[in-house]
Length: 275
Image (cartoon, rainbow, N blue to C red; front, side, top):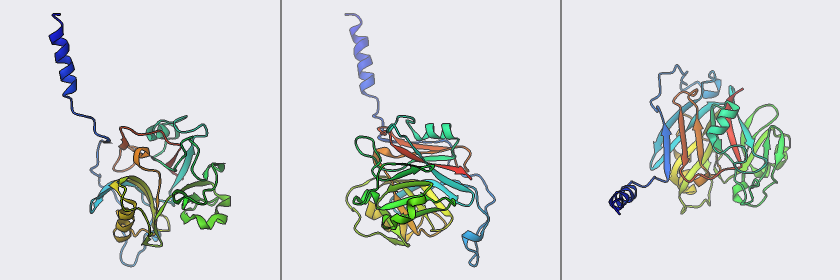
């Protein structure tokens, strides 16, 4: 009985510890070092400038915080890493994928069914998995790389164009199309989002947002870009508990890691690497 007070004190000390927050950020240095980056003038479009190195940065627009990597598709590319045996069968987290593939940045990608199958078509290094999603809004947009290495975001109605894809993820919904917000998006449910942005040319951004609705995110991106360039197309990927972004120390502004404490294993990832 003389050990009872000690046991009670131990229990009370554990009960009084603060709860672990649902979302955590692991960041080591978000202060960007000086980098010599060519800047456009009023007469010089971004596309005509030399390719710039990928850059991780954080920007808040209104109530939405954007954290991600801007890169130039002339010098860097996105590839799909798909786990054929299902979510978590090869990689538990984005960091694991980076370690295996020496990727500069890694983020979760497409949606998947409760059974772990892709909810839509996926192509990884020319290998297809899943099936064409012709109905759900979660398959209304396509990220793909053709055999020439060009990256694009398109609406799924361009189905015939994707037959020769080297990399592809069917996801959605589209948030911005041809510089305007997509209408009819949900304005009620808020969640952390994983998204892809492009100027429609060589400039891209891959990253995550703070919790927001799809409608608010689309309207925000169409009005003001988190990047120095105007967004022509924006695609929503799997978010919420699937959100997992890792940025290596080899990217200016990195390293950075963000995933939910209750993060769930995902089926596939997008990896950023040099061409």
